[in-house]
Image 1 (cartoon, one colour):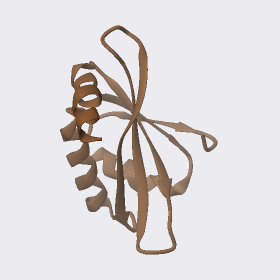
Image 2: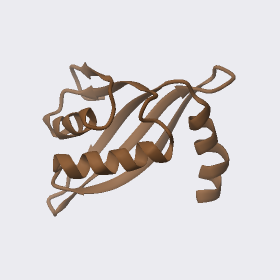
Image 3: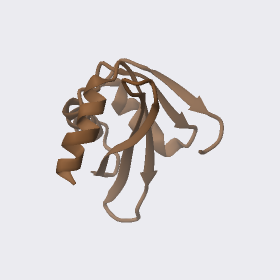
Length: 116
């Protein structure tokens, strides 16, 4: 898995000029919520691409823990200065992610009226 990541995903993302981020959240009754981070971007040959770059657990959506995990993940792929917009639905469970993202990247949040 890591070899595929290095050969294809990391290479493609480091060469892209901008990206759009979105998240999925799976809430649990236990101590951890699970987030996935998806990135949409145009490849060098101008083809639209979509890749999930991270799946991580956070204890009850603490802002600093979310920001730390996001920063580490986005730095790994060189995306902190490339994300131009963050797309989210209006679910209150993603408000913690939106607030954490403000500490990590400088981008607009585009809210959808319904879950996607």
